[in-house]
Structures are given as structure tokens and as C-alpha cells.
Length: 73
Image (cartoon, rainbow, N blue to C red):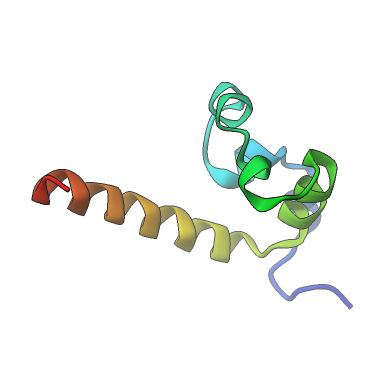
């Protein structure tokens, strides 16, 4: 059986939608490049990661960027 929080709707969302960014941002950022995975494999993995986890990662990344900006890092 799959992850508890995975719904049929989550499977239909595009990877950039699941990451909370635009398609343009997704294609420009090429997040799969930093993982060493092919785009196809990266998108397969993103499709099964629980949405709550992806949301938490996004909030954490935004918080870290804000701290860097405030502290001048």
C-alpha cells in the first residue's frame, strides 16, 4: 500500500504544482539536476512524496532564505 496522505488528486498534479511554484520557475530551476536523477525519475519520486512533507520543505526553505536576507548572509 502507498503512503497514507497520498490521494488520487495528488497524482494528477504536475510536479511544479506539488512544489508550489510555476511551470516557468520549475523549468528554469531544473530541481532534478541537483539530485543526480533524470527528470523522469525525479518526477516519479515527487509524485509519491506526501504533499504535507513537500509543504514543510517549502516553508523551511522560505524561512531560511528570509533569515539569510535579514542577517545579510
